[in-house]
Every structure is written in structure tokens, then in C-alpha cells.
Amino acid sequence: MSTSPTPPTPDAADGFGPLYLTWDDVGTATRTLSEQVAAAGVPQVVVGIVRGGMIPAVWLAHRLGVRDVRSIEVTRTTSDGINAAKTTLPTTRNPASLGDLSGLDVLLVDDIAGSGATLAHTEDMLRDLGAAQVRTAVLTVNRANWARDAEPQQVIDYIASLNHTWIVFPWEGQQHER
Image (cartoon, rainbow, N blue to C red; front, side):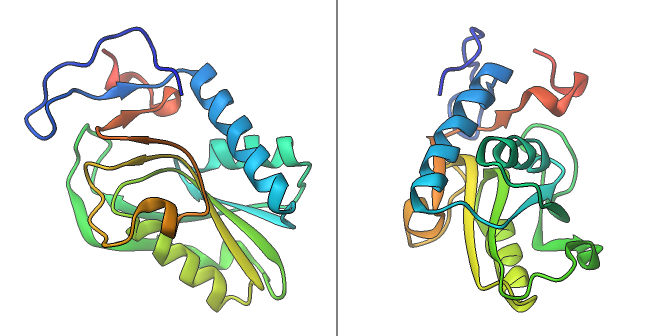
């Protein structure tokens, strides 16, 4: 994935500042993911994790020709700031918004996986709601936060890129201006 031309700045956590992605970067990432997903079969439903996962979820749904797009709000960060604190467990709001998933092939999408806890929590929820198959896709993984024994590629089905720093997406607005 390409990045915007701003060079990384020092950061105490990982030696680099945040990585600012552009809309072109997101377009390239969703193209990569859609090719990976299509090769394994187009899902019946795309579910985006609100907030950051909805934009790539909709983009992927269009690229894959999937009209059934749903959302679920699951969060771990306590604010929108760079390197924001995390809650111990993911917090879910309005799980009823997913509707009936019985017997469906579902693609679960988020913008980023840090520890992988939000994705795993939501994947379990979709299975509990009867999804026959749940596949996962993320634009990027922040390896600096990954704390699982298994590598991200062993846990997440489709990954556009791996990074080692905080990622700022183009939809995150003015609070992250360089």
C-alpha cells in the first residue's frame, strides 16, 4: 500500500509517528481484498464494524457485487486520538442491527486490526447469530499492537497490508491533521 508523502515522525511507542493513508491507498487496499475474497467465493453478506470498517465494507460490497451490507458497532478504543487507550474487552452496541444471519456466508470487514480482539469478538457474535461461514478482512494490521501467539495471517482471512505503527485513515477528519 502506498502512503501519503508526509514522512513518519518519531513516536515513543514504536519509533515512528502515525502513517497517514490516502483515499488512493484505501482504493488499492479494497481492490486487493476484493480480489482475494472473490478468489475464494463471493459472500452473501458484508458486515462492517462501525465506524472505521463501514467505508471499506461498502467499497468491498460494491467491488464484489454484494447488495446486502450490514453494520455492527464494536469498539475498543476510548477516543479517536493517536495511540488512544483501549478498553479491556470490546464493547458492542445494537447487535440486533445485524438481523438474521442464519445459514449465510458473511464477510466481516474492519479498517484495522491491532490486537485482533474486536475482530475475534465480532466473528464469534456472527457465528452465534447463525452465520454458516464468517470470513474476515482488514485493510491493515498494526503489528505494534498484535499480542496473539498466532500470526495475523493465521487469524484473519484477508489482509491488504501489515504495518508497525498507528494508522490514520482519510475519513478520520481534522482531529488527525498533520
